[in-house]
Image (cartoon, rainbow, N blue to C red; front, side):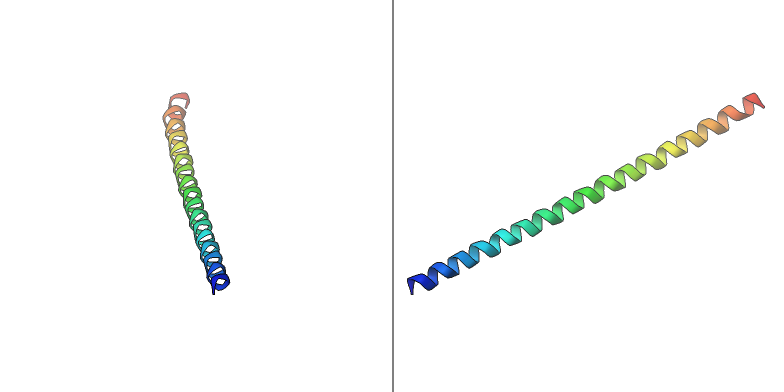
Length: 62
């Protein structure tokens, strides 16, 4: 009886650690996705700035 209880406890601990690992993986993935989104937004804004600068500069020289 005692051995079976110990085995059950071990199993419970393992499932808890697995669940925690899965949660941490999900959180890491979400953070990576957020970082990618922000980087993409920054790139888009930079391209917009560059195009605005070009459109402002080009008429002067022409």
